[in-house]
Length: 330
Ligand code: UD1
Image (cartoon, rainbow, N blue to C red; front, side, top):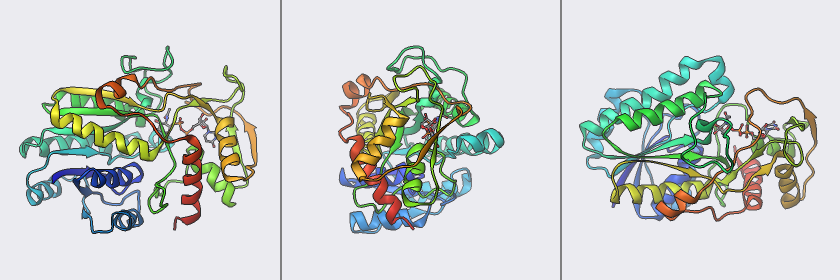
């Protein structure tokens, strides 16, 4: 069984990936200090897979603690690096926190990998590296624009660090992950007050918020609201398994978009939630949000060609699972 180190494996995308790795016969080893997630996800993983999972309660920026993890685990096929802060607004208020943690953890991980002869790494990147692309759907050759936030900047800089290191790497540039595992046993447990669209919709549905404000309806899009590419988190998790298989058989540096290729407006996303869950969502139109781009969706041809991966789940299924998670989470 091939051991894979999964930093941030108790987080939203990390926990879903751990489940998919196990289903593909890998042995994931989680490194997570739970600083922005909950033990609920570790327990949820164990319920889904019906066995215990190996978990180190370790801060990835702590080199000596990471040395101990590598010494204890011995031979590993590769690492998947999720551990990072992700609140865009907080990154504007406290950029240093983002530079220290997001780049610091990758630096330590790459050092440990080199010292222990672990060659393969998959990195959680984001479509935010493209800023507002000139051509849509955006492909991997689009230039990196000036980052909209320090969070976005850390994604660009981490991709650069990977290019300069001797490892074999895949940067997966995620579009907008939504939904949860069908069991509703794992999901987004971050402490941050949600600022992403779907968690806000579910909070309105359950009564934690009175309404959702749509940030602008005067964009040059068919209904005036922004367009994004919403990808089911289980599909996204599966792309990591494909990327690990690819890295085990290929060397070099690679970057792939991971999206559905379908652009969905904010109003369409709200409608999809309402129709699938037979609920009505109270919304109003507000001003544009600073830093929002008008539209972005993926050209996913490369990931299909090289990894044999494509999105299979529908937005409707994602909306059903998002609602189940909101109802069941602690
Ligand atoms: C942001 C980040 C992205 C990150 C992602 C997940 C940028 C440019 N993008 O994406 O890198 O990976 O979060 O953390 O930094 N919306 C509303 N009302 C709301 C909330 C959202 O209208 O209350 C709209 C937004 O204007 C946007 C869409 O919903 O058009 C999606 O927003 P959000 O879920 O926050 O994701 P992004 O901003 O696309």
